[in-house]
Image 1 (cartoon, rainbow, N blue to C red):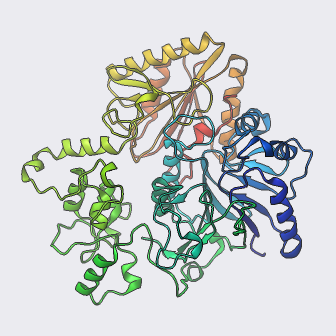
Image 2: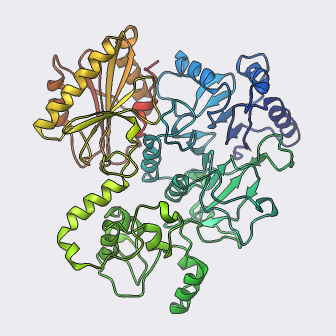
Length: 567
């Protein structure tokens, strides 16, 4: 069976006539192709192109092959996407795209799906501090992709709108990049995600140029990643906006084939030390080869305390950042407790890794090693403070979006999500950094009940009912209970819709019917196992649906957000 044939496209900007004319031409000369994947802004920049765009959306013009997009912003986006969200055909779990019209699919939020055998992951929208229904991604979207990175298997294609920070190889960059700032239309969150997901191909738009980077090695993985930045459709400089690709799915490749590297393979741009520092370390360790050095994150010359199975001065980044490593004693790199302690004391990871921080004065972390022995007695306090700094939901964090906060209680607060599913979508969040709302104290549970009752009354006054759901990750992120209002007329169908979505993923919910909300949550506490991830939803009529995720089960962290029941 031949590999799938995919066309990749940059910012469409509503120029669908030009895009599909080119697609038909390429399809005729080099096809047939199976699909078009579009990155960057898909909708028009101005109303002048809206009529042309709507001809395709409303079926007056034909879309020749299945086309997927993630750039859900621009003129007309809200109207088109709201209609797609309400379409009954898009109910259930839709990781593989909401159907907008024949052969046109919107990849919403974030997710991972299989396209002609290829594993495709995506992050829709752009980073924004403003809560918008369309065009931006949320922390939930990011967390879902982080969870994906922990799952087995290799992602073939990763689609983002904005470029990752630091991806360009300035020593070998093409003339097209001259004068283009590395920070314009780049996103450090995308850099972090692509370093964790380690896709075989990363495709992005939004920067206005075409750029094909040399393949680079990934930390703790045998395969390489190739980055493609695509220019906009119809750009005046006539830079490449469409690119053909025919990759063999990683799932069908042999270990030898997947690990092949071309001679121009570089180190990862996300872990590369500055040239001077790298040269000095190379002089200290003349026996290290390039193929070996590409797998270490950073090293130090002084002796460190070691708890993993690592060797020499090569240290495990996952252990330093999170305090744990899934490979345990089998990890080839050092689990360095001193470096971990520096991280807990608030030292900037970029400073630890690279010896400098690219954020400059905007960075809220420390840029010197903290060697005060008196701080050791307050290690847990330091850990908590640092964790709060990093967390989007901790009230003490500089990253908290305070303008979205609606109400603050003693144990919980209510906030609007950055990426709401519908109007009046609310998050109920613990004030303390706790991993779930199920195993909290009785006082916390009582206050949570009061918040839920208030929201239910508020929704009922608008002719709506409340659906509450929570994803409990065994990795223990900051808990948030999501409250989504739905029309009362649709409340009776919600359970069937969730069951349908579960069936598509190959599992069945455990259903518990209770006359009181407190009884339902008591049953959840009895089911919950801290060693497993867990998902539950509280339905309007008192039924609680729950699912305990097994060790090797692939369960999307965005499940609750992606089930289409709210509109």
